[in-house]
Image (cartoon, rainbow, N blue to C red; front, top):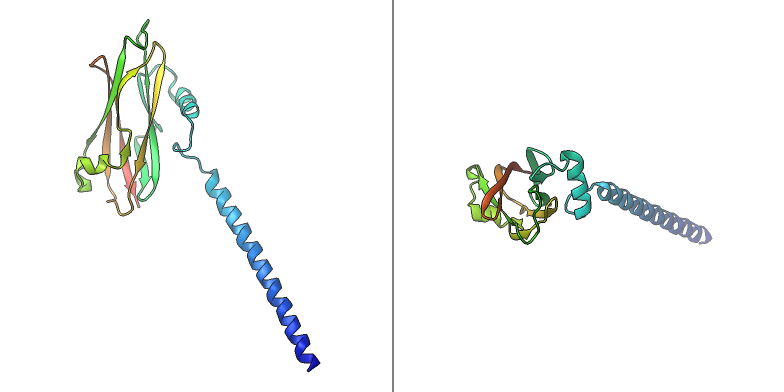
Length: 182
């Protein structure tokens, strides 16, 4: 009878040790995953100042309109949220913010392969137009455009065109492709 109790006690201690080691491994695994994914930075989490300084490093300060990130094809995974930024810089000399009014609009091209309407694609974007932006001489306006691509969206690409007007006159144009990946 005494041998049975000793065996049961050893089995209980063994079970407790296995549970403690398993929990430790689980916690270490979660910390590792958090560190890996936490280290990846995206424009969604970037501050306006960080984006502005990054744009200045890449392009300098002599472009009227910049789309950031500086890629021809911006890859976005279906089911994920991402963003791109638009920087408008007033390169007109001696202008006050209240005398020059800027506006921008985003239009879509080549979206037919997606099998979606323009309205459906625009419903994925937050902040797709800006009106009445007063930007003083050598000043800039930075706008983040949030992309929330739904799970199950068709894997395709489309062209985004950004047009900026200054006092209802054309000021600058840029474009990039957005590719939805699985």
